[in-house]
Amino acid sequence: MRVMGLDYGDRNIGVAISDAFRWTAQGIGIIERRREGGHLDRIAELVTEHEVSEIVVGLPKNMNGSVGPRGEISIAFAEELQQKLDLPVHLWDERLTTVSAERTLIEADVSRKKRKQVIDKMAATLILQNYLDSKTKR
Image (cartoon, rainbow, N blue to C red; front, side):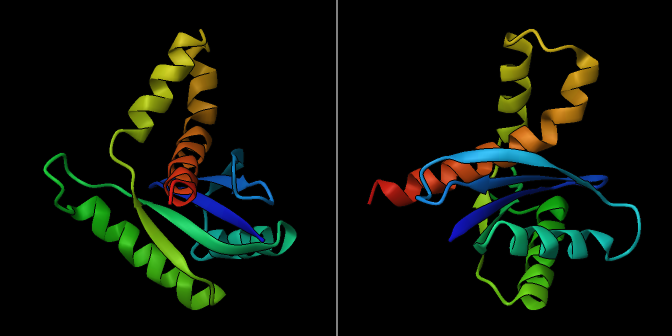
């Protein structure tokens, strides 16, 4: 069973899926948040399609480790997901993942327009990969 990583944002949710061995994370796209609850239905479809057994949601923390308003929104989203899907949902510290994703794309000389299209997916991939790496080191 695979693990899904989500980077929850105001407009988009970046989505990544692990391989079957839970070694690597691959970004699979973004979900646009247009109508109320539609994104939850789409996540449920992806969970079934990719045989996901657990989900990791990025938790934006302040640099001092405290949880601010953005983090509270992510916590509420994780709880909503857990109730809807009845799967384990883990929160993972995502400090600087978007910055790291942006830097990687700039170094790869990706245009600003294209960066906007893939930044959320890449952040989800980094969140999930960091989570997977933490589990394999034990």
